[in-house]
Length: 276
Ligand SMILES: [Fe+2]
Ligand SMILES: [Fe+2]
Image 1 (tube, rainbow, N blue to C red):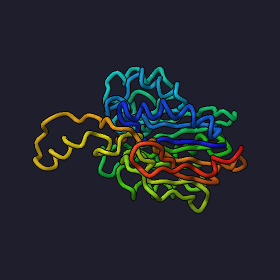
Image 2: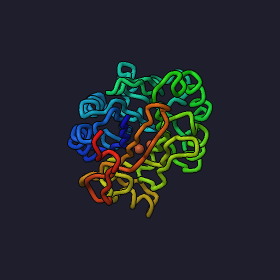
Image 3: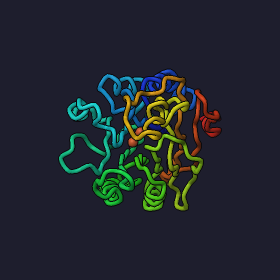
Image 4: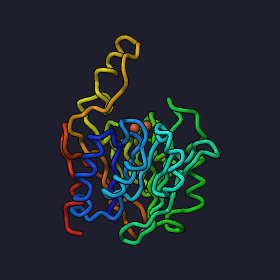
């Protein structure tokens, strides 16, 4: 099975990149399953229902989020009607929406997607390790799901690596999001779980984390907010990782970065460019 994961979509440039490129990539790579993190898709902050539908129409099977999930307040309501939109699993009990779901891939395989959020340098949510553990107990690899993807939305690389090792051999992949900058540590852990600390963003890299650089720079220089953050409007780099799943074990055979368009160095997953 071939899976593509795209990191945090930031504003219109990120959405345009996904809408223009994902339909072609689904064909070109013969993708079975696509996950897109949409937490910054609406002007950099949260997601609206029309934007969610755009991402789904472009070819996302599931849209994950993170700390910005409810920045657009309407998401508190519409998340309940969309089972393909996830928010972090370890938000307090009673939070609208859900943090995990079982979804059917194009191949017919059942894919469990878990969205969890870290706690280091972030809000003090419930323990993400125990929350993920409960999901894996309820629906394990090969006992409940053919593949298990975890979007771990976290700030600290230490916490992300620790979660990777915690689920090694029990999940197909742990993919970090939230920091918006792609890391070069993609690897298969000892027991077969694919791992990367951050998938990077789908946004304009002539920016501070996808936002127009003037306001963030002024805030660092003066500590005085002088305007709003708005997404940087240059061409986005589509950033993510590709994962080839061993259909026998549900573990990962390969992981490689994808970076297309915009300013970053371009790379495509070589193992997706061969015939299926
Ligand atoms: Fe983000
Ligand atoms: Fe985030």
